[in-house]
Image 1 (cartoon, rainbow over the protein chains, first blue to last red):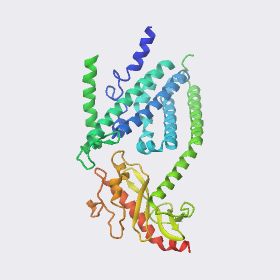
Image 2 (image 1 turned 90 degrees about the vertical axis):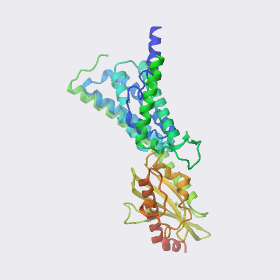
Image 3 (image 1 turned 180 degrees about the vertical axis):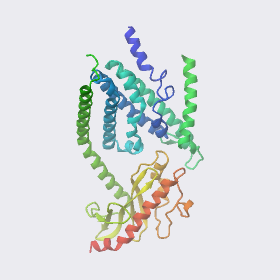
Length: 201
Length: 198
């Protein structure tokens, strides 16, 4: 029973208590870079989640075979391979999303969230726990990126998931689509998120 | 299984095995995806040709002319369109490296007089949500039915007639430049294309 509660905790922590974006502030490059619309955020989040899941699985499987001095390069090779696979598959089968995300896909390699989870969690835990950890963290990342993307899209282009609710030439806060808007939106969302999550726990 | 010791041979071996495995799996995935990627590119080209050219009855992909140009590294691809053996226009791939993140490739359809029929963006790496708006109807519409000999393709900031995209002036500039390049190539080779069918 205790084991089960533990695993649920393990899964949930990534979404709220240790949310990779709003609490741990990991993986800021894609977070700030691609979230100019809710759809981009969602697509990037799912791509990252997939890489995170696969790398956590592989790292937790091979952890005992890797000498600790070369563990970082080994993890990076594993992560880079999966990112390249994701990139090729996206270009071949979902060219629309590939065009939208563009240069940010190769940048998943340097997302410290993935290396962080491989190093801090998957290399010390068994495969089931690693999968749950990856799913939780990945979901937290997806949710965070979608919320941030949606906020910026609503304020910046007056639409949500490409669905426009203001007229074509209405004045919107273009600042929020631009890079500085990403920092501003992220800061306020982080404050809001932490305020709510501290109150509820 | 206990943790492997940090001996030299262990480190070399484990890295070697990992790189071999990842190399082979990448090769395998590449093998699987290279076909669909190529097919998708050709499909996009055909669809783009249909959008930018007037009705035609030849196969522009087969009649493609590769023209050496001083403006770009590779030769320029020109797709002539004929109807009843009459030259009705051509589509030209214009490109520039001056986009916000490098290469922008677009296909421009011209009528025989050099009027822009339509423009479709083929490849770009611009900022999502900003530069990518060059694919929107609102931006593209201002180019249609315009003849670059009288319509200045520079953005209004630089003394031209193109309304730049908000927050993406560099993209708009590059876009105009690529169209201008396609137009220059079209005018240079206009005569050749008409003669080809006769």
